[in-house]
Length: 155
Image 1 (cartoon, one colour):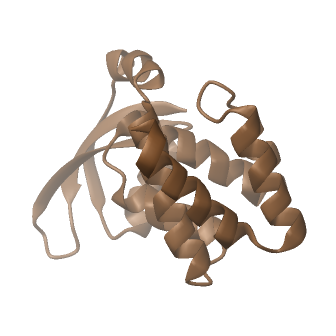
Image 2 (spheres, helix red, strand yellow):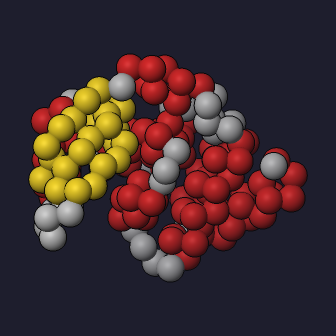
């Protein structure tokens, strides 16, 4: 996954720009076109890739868990919930991480196994609790409790 800066036109012809993550330039072009954006310039940012991976803080993970809890409790599927979070996420490193998680879930991996692939961001206890939530059908409840824990203790 790489981070790119881009410049383009939206469907109204207005100039817009942004930062986004994708496997390659073509994937980003397709992603932007699906969003109704005609890309004019796409540039890969090497420095951002390096910095973003090490800058995901506990407060970012807490925010992610809280957003995921809200969406899951609103009966939104996991992949759709992650897509929604990706669209709104401004932190490039976290956005990149969530994209990787979404891709893993889309390929059939469970949420707890997906998160366990990133022990630097999701510890063993968090992964185990999410596993219990998935197995018992109470993932939304577990995510709310984790979000409450982060709100009280981790930030």
